[in-house]
Length: 88
Image (tube, rainbow, N blue to C red):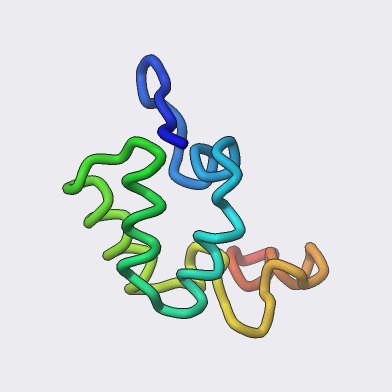
């Protein structure tokens, strides 16, 4: 499914969600499968350059983007937020 939006204003996770590919992308990131992640991003309309930048950033620090093998996206909200920002 090729995803196109008039002004390409959607973020990667939004495009992937709309295309039904978000779960596949998350699995690719957790499996450190850069090739699969790249294919999925290009399939939702990102250019090769944009895809390279997105994959580089996410794979450099997956936790920053909410990807971690122990399921950080499934933690209680306060715990998740405390991993991301200073709540004090």
